[in-house]
Length: 386
Image 1: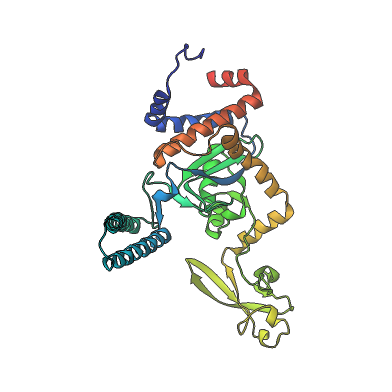
Image 2: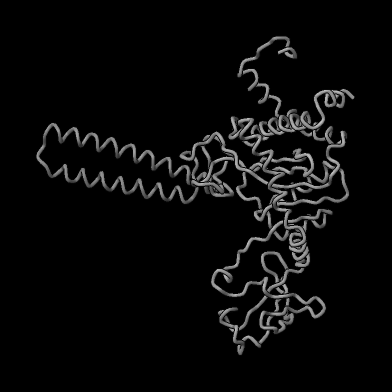
């Protein structure tokens, strides 16, 4: 109140200011992170990366995916068939006042159902024009996303952050409408590296970020990443050996299987844009462990041309098993603070640019309070005035 000269702007004034100055708010947020670096609070070239889903101003009933459109159409067609059957039954009965009222009600319901089917057809056309085959009617940029908690998910945005491991300050953030984190690792790590102005960077993330091309992009940018690899193969769950049970012998350029046989290199092929080297041996046919290894004639092991980078990631994780605990303690702190203490559990604005400005304001507020707790208010004011 003292800073405002006892002026008390209402919520509309504050909302309009946020709406009209979205780009400026994002710049202020970025400048404050630069100030933190100049104050020596971002001296450690190490970040933890994570994403969290925030609800948008869009009810689930006003979001349509392909499955939802098909399911709703089936429900409508079933209702129409039921009402038409009831009308046929009514036509065979003796006319009466009650019957006439019933026919009127059924006719009105059929009209409404046909109107809804017409709207559904329009939504389907709009959905087909969308790259991800879904549309949201209230906030067109929001998307239906799965969440780790109970329930069917949320219609909202996926907020990505890179948090420094020393002071838990948000170094970089970005609001996306992609429900997956898999393509975000290199993007967030590069942003953090640019902000920290360092030649190298260490980044830790969870298994949701594991992607071979993303790890390669980080390596080429001078970023060392540590994250666990998800177990996507069904072999282990079916009681068979997984790829991790085969040891790569770099000098021989071959794999050693659990039975002690070597699988030599055979040829290279391209799959999904990646060059894969193929290894196998004919000794599988007479192997006693074959039922525990493969259902085919022989076990074939593919190796990506940059697989040594993935091996290095696993070696770093094995050498530092506490890395995942550090990641959790680092990156879940800002999200927990924003959602629990600041009440920023959902967005109040619509469309991606406005939502990005709203998140920038939340990140700025979080970083501001963190710095005040770390160095004190007087030191912060002195640094701002310098």
